[in-house]
Length: 432
Ligand SMILES: *Cc1c(COP(=O)(O)O)cnc(C)c1O
Image 1 (cartoon, rainbow, N blue to C red):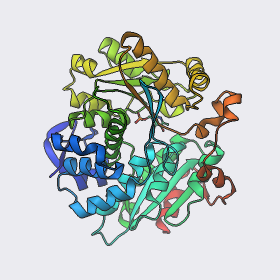
Image 2: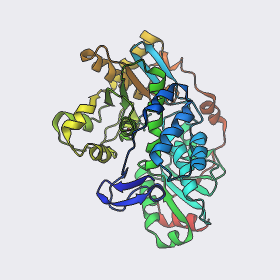
Image 3: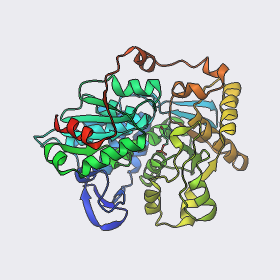
Image 4: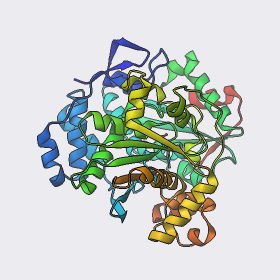
C-alpha cells in the first residue's frame, strides 16, 4: 500500500489519505512516495493498445498500490481523465503534447480533477462536509474550482483579488455556482492568502467547519500528471527514447515526469524550460540553489522565484547535483525570444503555440543544436486563447477560442464582496 514521507523526515510514514487531506506535512517538507514501483515489461508491451484512461489507471494502480480500492480508483481515474492529450507532429522530430483539452484549457485540469475526486473519496466517511479554502491570483483558482464542481461532500470557497484577475478568469471563478462560492476581496492576492492562513489558525472557525486547502503541492495533483508522459510516449515512440521538454514554474509537472521515468518510462532527457525566472537553470550551472523574487513575464504561469517542488527533485536525487544534471537540462528565455518562438512556430508550421509552450519549443531547438537526432516531446501546457493579449496581433486574430471559454463571457458573475478585515471573512464562514 502506498505510504508517504515528508522530505524533511523520512522516518515517519503517512497514509495516502493523510497526505491528501493534509496537503503539507507539519514540518514544512513535501510529501513523497516512500516507494515508486517499476511497471512490468508486459505493461509497456500492452501500452499501444490501451486508451489514455486505461493506461492512467494502470499507472495509478501500481503507484497507489491498494491505498484506494481498485473499483474506487477506477471511478476516480476514469472520471478525472475524460479528455484527450493528443500529440501533434510539427516535424518528424518535434512533437507537441497538447495538455489543454480540459475544462479550463490548461494542464492543471488533470491535477485538479484527480485531487478533487481523491479528496472526496478520503472524506467519504465524514459526516461533516469539507470546506476547501483557496486563495488565487487567477489560473489555479479556475482549475481547482472547476475540478471540485459538483463533487459530493465538499464545498469550495475561493478568494480572489478584486480587479486583479483577467475578465475571463473572473468568470471562471464566479459563474459555477452549486458547491463553489467566490469571494471578491478588496485587496491583493497576498491579502487573500493571509485571510486563508488566518482562518486555518482560528479555533472558532475550525470547530464550526472542517476546513482544508487545495494546495498546489498536494501529492494528489502530481500523481495524474505522470499519466500523460506515458500517453505521449505511446503516441510518439518509434524505438528511440524521447526527450521531454516541460515548461516549468513550480516544477510540479516535470517532477511528475521524473516519477514516470522511475516507473520505467524510457526517457533520454528532461528539459526544464524556463522564462526569465531562471533559478533552476542557475542551480544546474553552478550547483547553488538561490531563490529570487519572481519577475513578471508573458509566460506568467512560470513566474516563480522559489520553485516549491525543488525539494522533491532533491529528494529523488539524494541532493546530488551531478545526478540531477545527468537527467535534467535547463534553458531560460526572455520574453522577446518567446515572442519570436511563437512567430517561428506559426510561420514554419502554421501552428499557434502559447507563450509557455513557446519557451519549451525554444529549449528544444537549443538542445537540437548538440543533439540533432533526438526526438522531442514539448508539453503544451495551455491553450493559446488564454494568452491572446500577449500574442502577436496577426496570430491572435487566427486563434479559435474554444466554446467553453467564449461562452463564459455571457454567464452571470456571482461573488460576495468582502474587505481585507479578517472579522468579515470569519463572520462569512461562521454564518455557513
Ligand atoms: C502552472 C503552469 C506551468 C508551470 O507548471 P509547474 O508544474 O508549476 O512547473 C506552465 N504552464 C502553464 C500554462 C501553467 O498553468
